[in-house]
Length: 285
Image 1 (cartoon, rainbow, N blue to C red):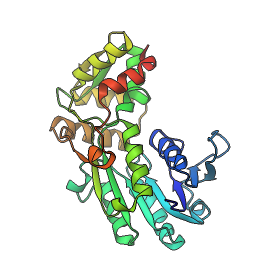
Image 2: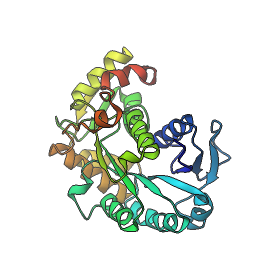
Image 3: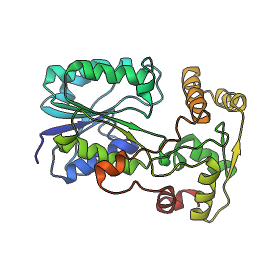
């Protein structure tokens, strides 16, 4: 079914890149939003367009002729809701007919949390919507600070104790986003996206070790040690507090539940961590 042009925000990131690819493979027109269209080589037929949350004047040109919007608020920003709200307002002016909004697992439990305030702004806009609420990404172990830690120390140092998380593969998130963007049966729904199992970081380290053929350990650390380490690396205080709050939720068990929404939407079980580790094994070798 042709659905008109889709604007994918964050199209050069882990989730957005895969969303753009999958939607384009369905024969849809996809506009890939990025701050620097000339920096990234995007596969045809993706159309790069300049977009920057810090420059609201880029919103209207990016949204021109767009019918569907994949929205991912700026990660790691404690005011990402404030940056994204003007985009929602502009989308309404532009006649956007659907917003698929990527937020986070459990945001509906805290009406004051920024991603929930953004959800409410989307809801108040009157634009048909789908909320996607994923848990912690499996891919956080093959890129970014945790990956850097593994490469440098052959260990994962986090203040997660022995708590469990139902990690989800980015590829499943993107597949569901694609379905939500191209099948109107999902409009008005909110999906909690998790993997099919709940794992400790001890489990994660063992699975990565087995796939990579190299010993990777998990070393639980205190919140104080974790925060001191982030501060020593010059990480902004706002981000540190947001990160600390996430792991407080982890230790309380709030990220452990397993949802059936991935299988409900895709008609298959979610990708398991063992499969993810095998697919990305060369990252840790």
